[in-house]
Length: 358
Ligand code: KG4
Ligand code: ZN
View 1 (cartoon, rainbow, N blue to C red):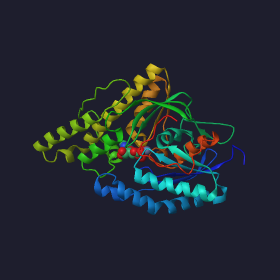
View 2: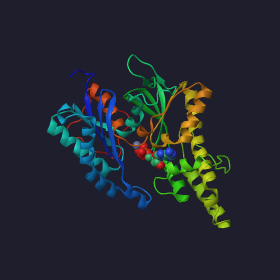
View 3: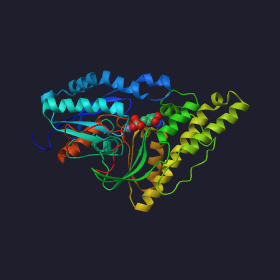
View 4: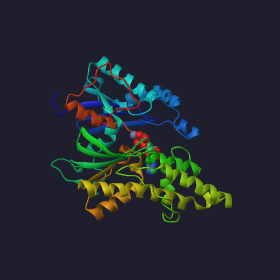
């Protein structure tokens, strides 16, 4: 099989989603995700429950991904998996499964950094579904989504991370800004919890924000240096504000839910976009991407498009299914590592924290 034709099975199990994907060259043949509703009852991910659910889900999810892709086990050239960062008990399940499969099939094993996966999701070949969008270009073959050109800036915003990444090539990236405390997704989820939404509340805030006034309530922006972020002050600010208002009117949240969601979302998005403006100006880079679960947020997607149009940036926004955790992004990262022969051996272990630079 030539270097251009390879099939990679990828496994992602860093948090509370068990996902398996099959990638052929740069096209995704299948990308299946088993979520874990159990955590909703507890207001956050319970690590022990997450690893148990991964154990139950991993075999059926991998089987289904292989079946949906229409490939045989013997067609698979390599198995990629998320080594970290993430919840150790969750990562161990995917790592052990991938190691066993690699041993049984005698194929290379590729240990992927989850955060690289979020960024490199932009390099997945997409189908023609959304071809009317201006981000899609005609190539020699089918219509394809444009991919970022190096160097580009990627704002990776998820439940666990908020990073400004300078992406110099597929496997050469540098974090030039990060959160000092809570991640942007955490800010959404914690605010959502205060408003009475189930975990993870980010999508609920997004939904209600659509019918609210983003300028109704003002929350203070953090003062942090460089390209860093801070969201813990905002969280406390929202808490004190709600406590005060609810004391005066117990129905305050119910009566103002949409406006509260819109104002909170507007503030978080504004904090993110302001830093992006500073970074791109300082570095003179006009290729700007977003990634991670919070890149599914409609306010952020819209603000990036508007700011991009205003500043002359080329902006790159992932398809919804590649924003939150998924194995397709691990597969595409695995592909770039496969081409460079960057393989792990059977001594590899899962790690809750992994160095960012390769
Ligand atoms: O990348 P991800 O799936 O998992 C991590 O690696 O953390 O991100 C999950 C985060 C959660 O905090 C969730 O609330 C947030 O992404 N999220 C959203 C939206 N969709 C997911 N936040 C705001 N608006 C959304 N539409
Ligand atoms: Zn993630």
